[in-house]
Length: 522
Image 1 (cartoon, rainbow, N blue to C red):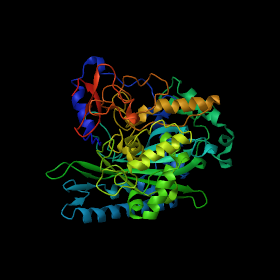
Image 2: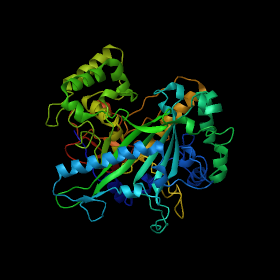
Image 3: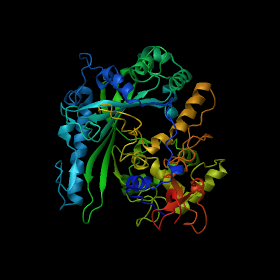
Image 4: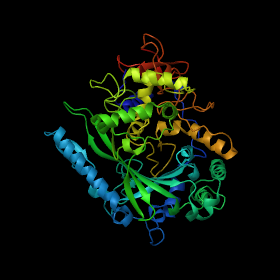
C-alpha cells in the first residue's frame, strides 16, 4: 500500500534531459499572483525597511542596519525561543545516542551525522533575511475575525561568507523563520483594524496585476492603497521555525536521511514574548499510542461525524490535548504508509496494534453518510491514512517539498538573483495557489467561501485549467495512482490521480499503487 518514492528530486532531475519537448512545459506564469510576493528585488527593498526583522519586532536602531542573530536571540521576546531550541537539540542528541550508540554526530562534516551548528544560529555573522510574503487568508476559518493570516518568511543567511558557485550565491544555512501575522489586527492595529476582509482580499488581488517590480513595487505595496499598508508588530500572532537539525549521507548500512525540526511559538501580548506552543494538528502519535485512554479519546473525537467532515475537507482543528510541541520531519519520505510518516503505528498493517482499524474507518464513513456528509477526499481506508498523514505539520512538509521546506525563497543576496533560474517555492506551494486565489476572490466578492483543500500531493483545480498538464496536476512528474497495479480497480480516494494524454503512471515499487506521471509505461 505504501510508496516510498525515495530520491524523488534526483529522479525528476535525471529524467528531465530525456523528456520530449512536448512535455517539457514550464510552470504556468505567475501562479502566485495576488496571493504571494516573491520578487527578490522587491523583497530586498522591504527587508531594508519596516519588514526586516528589526522593524517587525520594533527594535530601535539606525536606518538600514539589519538585526544580526546575536542581537535577535538576546531580545527578551526571543529568549524563550532560544531556550526551547536548545532543549530540542539536547533531546535530539540524547535520543540519537540511545538509538545509534556507535554512530558519531557533530557539527563537523566528517561526522557520521552532521548536526546543525547552533553557534552559527546565534552568531553576529548571521541574520534572517526576508524571503517571501505569503497571503494565507484561505485560513480565515481558524479565526474569522482576523481574516486569515499574512506570513513573512525569513531565510537564515550568512552575509559575510564567501560567495558560492558560478552565480555567486550567498551562504544560506538550512533554516527558515515564519512570522505569522493576523491579516486584520485588533484595535491596536490602527487603521488596518477598520478594514473588512473583502477590502484586504481586494488589495492583494489588485496588487497581483500591477506591472511594477523591485523598489517601485515595494513602495506601492506599502502605499495607502497597498495590501501591506498598516501591517506591523501589532499584527503578530506567532513565530514558526523550521531547521535542518541533522543530515546523514548515504553510507554502507545507512540510507541518506535529513531531519527537519519544526517548532511553534505563540506571541503573548502582555509579556511581549514568544512562548512554546503546540503545533496545529500535529497529533502526538507516540503519546497517544502509549496512553490507552488518550488514544480512545482521540479516535472518538476524530471519527465523530462533524469532525470527520472537517478532517475530510482539510479544515479540522484537533484539540490541544492531543498535540505535540515539536515535530521531526525526515526526508525523503513516501506518500502513503511510510515509516517516516506521522501516522505510523496508528494505522493497520504496521506490525503493531493500530489505533484505527479498517472496521473503524469504514464504520465512520457509513456514519458520516447517514449524517448527510459526502466526503470529498476520504473515500477509503487508504484515503483516511493519506489525510491523517498530510493534515500534520510533519506530513505536509514531507509532501512535495524542497527538502523539508515549502518556501526557501529566491536568494536576493546572490550576484544574479532571479525567479527564472531558481524556484522559490515547492510544488506543493505552487500547486495550492489556484485554490488560495479562488478563496481570495470569494472573500473579495462576498460570496460563499469554500475553505476545503485536497490532499497535499494533488491540489484542487477549482475549475481552473491553469494546472492541467503540469507537474502540479497530471503532467510530467505529477503524483498519480496506477489502476494496473490494483487488481480491483481504482481506490475511490485517488480516482482522479490520473496522467495527461501521452503519459503513464509509473509506480516506484511493486508493493505500491502510487507513482509519478512519466512518458511510457511499466
